[in-house]
Image 1 (cartoon, rainbow, N blue to C red):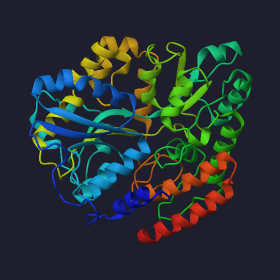
Image 2 (image 1 turned 90 degrees about the vertical axis):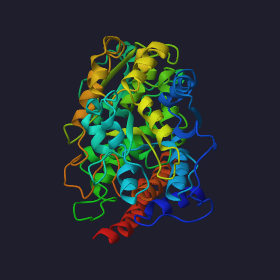
Image 3 (image 1 turned 90 degrees about the horizontal axis):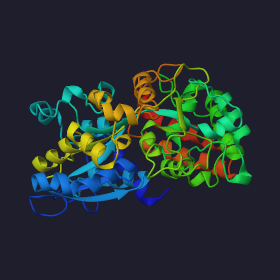
Image 4 (image 1 turned 180 degrees about the horizontal axis):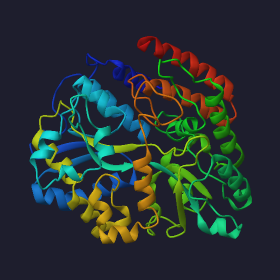
Length: 449
């Protein structure tokens, strides 16, 4: 485990007291000027879009300059956890997710945003989708981050490749059907994989899709009484299926493939299917960024024993308690998550690229409905059917579809993902990976039993 990731995980574990260490100065972040704020964000297309639009719009309107730092998902989590947990104060705003926010709110590391959101009638906080707000709400019932975009997961497929083979994709496919399609569509000679799936280590990379497969196969990380089930038959069967599918019919370089790599692979027409975040559709339908625009079909997340299996996630803007520029930070957050910002993206960059999945009103915009007609309804349906309280076949001890909502999961999930990724690469076995994972899960469970 990399030293930085280990430090980040250790900091996250301190549920009541902050982490101390180098850089723990408590000073305000970034530039000392009142009209400059620092922002740390994940390197997804929606974040790259806001970086392009901020200077000519937000800064021009408010006089507030935003200094952005963009990092890949795993590095972002490492960096933001260190800064927030250490009370480093380097950033005024940061993108965090549904996993971190309730934990960090409980620790007192984030500003609550409900007060500002509800006081600003133009912001229209009632328009925010309830599943997204709920995922960002602390034990006190207040919202501690504002959703930038929301997502579930679904299966994307290349309609031209399916038609060429005379194959028809059902709206609710099973994983067995997906594996059969992948075998028929895999064409290594033409550089086309049957399917693209994440194999990159990380609890939020590999285990985001894989945990949903575990759920629908009847597995779980922990039972209601915190009994660990990482090496159970159901968890093992789901993981072996996932690993075998990738090894037989997945993309080249699968152990190094995360969301971004699969987006590029599928978007270049190099994979027949891709199971991942619903938020990917906006980029895939942008002809300037994708070779498969207009050629993609979208269906619900594949299942085995459950009716639905999509995850629930939001990348959201949070304000660390260490910022000394809370007013400027809220102005940026409220702009970035507003109806006006969605309109700006649509008009300047294309309506399919609107950061959707967070506001009810988005799905009433005529231009958005037209550009997103291939995926908008199924995205909303997937979000509505995702159930973080009951995502599988048995009661759970903590919230979360594709994660377990406890501080220790970041470390546990990442460690197990490293071993599963090694199994995809052929240097480990699933049985060994999950046997080791079971021991680590047993150590976690001792705290909660």
